[in-house]
Image (cartoon, helix red, strand yellow):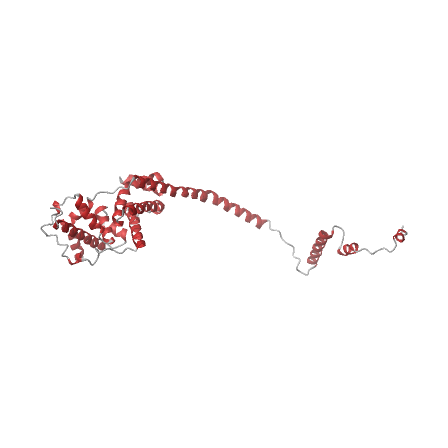
Length: 194
Length: 136
């Protein structure tokens, strides 16, 4: 969407224009749903949470001041709702997170001869492996990975969305990618890509 | 700063960029049509009370406020001033006497005082009615 057109759309959404908000949903529903689904790991719950994201956005659009981009604002709502849901369910971060074996550097080594990124094609099986690798990360790593590598948000935008320093965003992204790297390598070692 | 630079270098390495591309290339998920229609209904439901609220806010509330202000002004401007009957001045005593008379009159009827009312309610019996006629 062009910047001018998006600005006009946002202005109409601020005035609670239902038709304009419908177009706004059209533009962002797949991205928000994809993010939420990977965060909650459940399609039905993701559908509910995504609806809640857009309802909250509609309710609070009058207070959107434009200091951040509308995308950053929307993903902040999505992120907060995912965190709320996680807290409500009392879920603790899963095994992959800070202090895991990636911090010693051994797993992050990319000089392994089997590791040939250019030859990696995203077939259905590899997609499943990557999705599982994302699902088993801690929420903090997953959020940063998805916002940066899926939503192409800058480090600064992510830092603003998550209220953490830029350095933290980078280190989390590094840990998240290193985890995925090890998952893919393991898959290749076990002959999945042979 | 050095650590940050090292981190930036690592994040831009070939292996890390490959992972990034892989994540970017994951297929998109699109919510169902029923999901979308359900969302539309919820948005419409959110929008309707808002309009009703605006009408209430912009039309009804000022009208209620003006009405209350007018009623208050009427009470203040046309407030009845009760005469002072508690003092011991001649005026106060006269007013008090007048009010007593008015109260008596409302109970006993016009033209009768308390004493008269007592007298006529208990007339002295006449011993001989004929004797009484002799008066005429």
